Length: 344
Image (cartoon, rainbow, N blue to C red):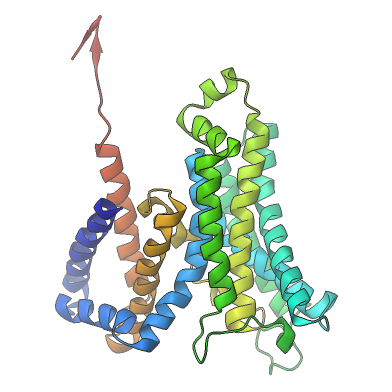
């Protein structure tokens, strides 16, 4: 963990220097703005924690998929479909139900919608051997346009002055927050519980052992008689379901309505890929890494306002972190060249 964290910090430094060469803003000012805005005040810390929640849930799900060498790149779309599932329950199915029942059903619906969105690349991989990377990635764009269609079309509220929002959720469909912050603590507690649960699942269960075997050698897993198709489906359902829960948290805990896709998620599903790898695919280590990247997202908002830098600045740094972490992992491998029977 510490090695990857230091790699990420060592990459952020040249990333900020590159931004300085392009924009002319001094590196020390950029660093100060990011750190102070994310961790220098109670408001900054609470916002960092708020933004870490969807990263945590998506990252935990992705860690399980990546461990089995199932490359789910669709957490963004699965998150959005989870938001759709929660909105459907809150506004059109049981809007007058008691809060505990309504929120429970909303979370279940969001998890099911996210899982079903992940089921599509799973079944296409099993039946037609289609690449799950391409399928899950393309389905992100379908989910984005579907959400936009809903808020511009059939679910558009007549009470929002023409803005592309759904009707506001009733109070019993809004996840409670901690004091005057935006921290929807039930979702945070759920994320922490699921981090422990998935960690135990991967380390101590039969499914976890099967995931490890498949991730290390798919052909050996087939030879050992493991049901590869079943495991692929279970893993992608789990991964998609967790991302769907993140979507529920965003619409029911933050916005209290469905809105355009970019308003629900500024790319949490994509950033969670970096979080999962930086946490070494360990659900427990993903918790602090999520806080780090939550802070970067808060810092990114700050430098847009205070320094006039584009919003893509933080995405640029995040991309560098992923490239260097992946390269660092590859550099640990040893490559041998055989010549005849002698190893060189």
